[in-house]
Amino acid sequence: MTSDQPTPGQRLLAGLGYPFVLLPLIVLLTDQKEIRFLRFHAVQALVVGISGAVVGTAVGILLLLPMMVFPPLWPLALGVPIVLVGVILLAYLCGYRAYRGELFVVPVVATLTARFVELPSR
View 1 (spheres, rainbow, N blue to C red):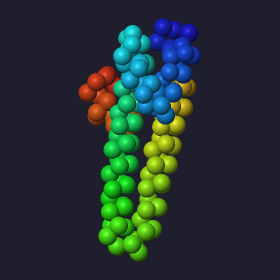
View 2 (cartoon, rainbow, N blue to C red):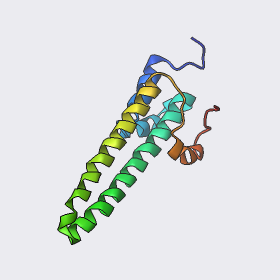
View 3 (cartoon, rainbow, N blue to C red):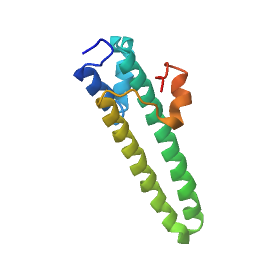
């Protein structure tokens, strides 16, 4: 194993950082942030988690407000769990890829992630 390859423990930390959003914060506050692989995934996991929370809240408000004004629009409320499931699936997919040791970029959040860490070359 070369020095560029993450250890199994580092891969596990990076993988668990996506579904458990507080874990990347712990990584960034400790000396683990010196490891490029962990720092990249910690920042990206935080951005994905915060973006997912913001999008989920916005979609929830935008879909539930019309239903409150006009109750026959109740089928719009079904969009909220669909978005929630999508965010959860994204977190687990990213966690799985990080656990495999991949340095990958989530396209939607790449510009925000690039402000804090160097993105991997394609």
